[in-house]
Length: 410
Image (cartoon, rainbow, N blue to C red; front, side, top):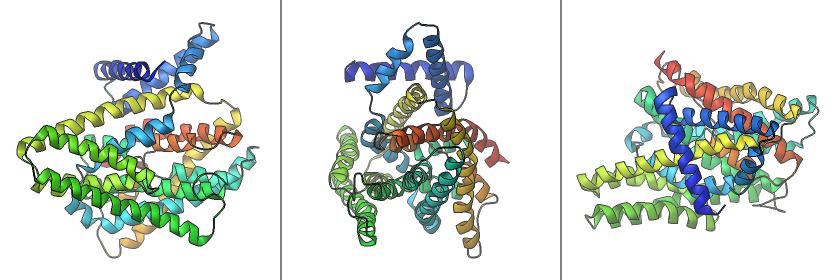
């Protein structure tokens, strides 16, 4: 199938599943889509056992879709920009130290806790996965997914300060996690940093990716802001924001700086200063409508894809057990990496009651984790890590996603 056929099929499935969810199941859209997609995957696998041949066709279709490229170099920039547009900079400034610490030290701490725990637990299950690959798993599973988190937050009515902490952290920590992942991939002998893993090289790469991404996002965001300020034509202004998202992300990746961080910074600038000083009411209204629609459509396609990825996993019993064991391990690592810094900061500032508990349970994993797992070099380690990641992500979205709203309300 060519690209147009694949896109047509994915949009059709997303539309059908969204209709079924809205009409029958009535779950939050992303969770409902994932659940229906998983059920469809199970039905296709069952049909394969009956000799109907659907399984091979479905796997062939999924093999033609590069999930990593589709998300990390296609959909992610638009989803991050749409999320950042609605984060108020004034609120974020009040929570800047909390967000910065959770998105940086929190991710790094969780990476090493999960990585070392995985190394020893996998060995007990008979899985001989090198420590560096376990640390890579720690890096890809530690960030909370802004796509999953923000979708849930829209429906639960969380206190504004808590919502800003969760949304701000999730928007930035995936960019930090990608940088940590690239550094560790250099240690494994692949990709960025290959052959040079000295402390200075690691720090240089981190500064180049993270700080470079933030500065680049500020520059391109400011350029587009001044262009928006100079005209009053909402069609052109929407086109400028689309160019900022797609062109800015592509250029950032070419320059080997963090595209996710760049787009989040640009989105915050346009969503705050741009919205306030550079747009008419008509433009503002159309901008919100356009990016909300883009967000909904891409989210629908993404969660259908996540559900269908079940068809291409290697079902080794050890991998399944390892995935189930890593669910509580990743939650414990999240609890510690969030709980320790917040407990220390509580001496100087007030927090919403049960903040640690809500941040721990509300730290949903999503498509970014699966995309990073798929970017690992082919081999037994990749097969194992992909299955384990998938189990943690599905548990996170279905179980945590369905209950975090009730936790916030309580």
